[in-house]
Image (cartoon, rainbow over all chains, first blue to last red; front, side):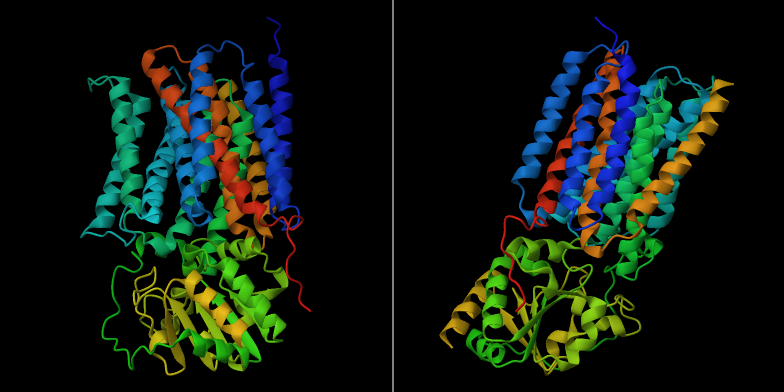
Length: 461
Length: 103
């Protein structure tokens, strides 16, 4: 066979180049779509050229593994609903972390120097934490596990102890002192069980509302683990190193930006057990007042300015298409319509923008929190569609667990109509006194159905 | 000796790559945070090539089993990450649709 292994490095360099171009294109709305295609093409050629690596065996296992894993990823990702995308990111990120941990294990089972061995241990630890942590995040978002924070006394101490033990066992993997009669495989088993355990324990106390930040951080973790593995395998794989570090850096920055959008610090996200405790001594005055669809239709038809504040409820009910119809109808009645988009409405930053774009709502209808907040006092009707925590005035009150989170100040509008399925609490598990205000009316029911009825009622007017 | 040289080279590479990742992401509108997270999730799918090499060089059954699982997980990261990102970004494609224009 002709030796084509000289082609590997040039192709890997091209791969990295296209990855960077792809990421750069993905960071602008107009070119975003082409960005992933560039990155995808680069990944494809990188995978093909890897088969040319000298001295490889087990080609049939490789091909079977790619078909199984690739087929699984493709089918699952194609079939899930758009609303479930966040947990899909968590799931596939976890798998990447698991692969990184696996590579570390194989590297450590072979012969390594102290330096490459140490890099493999750190990569393995981070990869394993990212794996089990992402899986918990996936289970919580998917609803297969209670999304509320799970806490127990002395939790932080236990977590730190497990992490410390994982690090100690990692040191033993490299050191293998002769006075302990354990084989390398047993050290590795201990090391990975502890590392996986730490990822699991670390994610338990984190509430569902903070999951986007957590997933983003595990995404950065996986990137870092991939980079460390790239250094530790022989020969070093610089495509992994560079791509991994780019993801690690970009992911870290993204994590900070997301946390900032929610006005939470990273340590608060991880150690705050957000939403686990109820605010004490708070009494809500008033009662929830419901309203009928026809009354809302009249209110909207004779308003000058309407602002729609969508949230996760709209995504769950798949109501965006109906909301678009409602917008067009109000437009035709020359009612000014705007959308107030909270950066973390839904389960992911940008979730609402994506769904509304899907339904065909033009970009110039959408406004950021900071742009739209001064407009609420001059607004006749605010329609809150399935949003809760992002419009909770408790964020302005000291002592509330939400205190300090920038919210949409919908309570300043003349009328607030809240579309809601039932009387439950938001994702953060905190009572919302907006619902009890005098200018607030509750419109109960499935968002898609209710907005559909609103459209019909408006047409009749 | 070689280890020492590679270590410093590695630090150079790591520093430049980290800077690249930082710069590429630093001016991104909030609406692209989710697709970008998904896109970078796809990019660390490059772990697949490492898993392939690890499996290809594996000699003992234990190494082969772990390498095989790593290839499966890596391949799922690649295809799943791509499809999810593609589906999210599809919605930013305006050519096929007629979005409402403000009059």
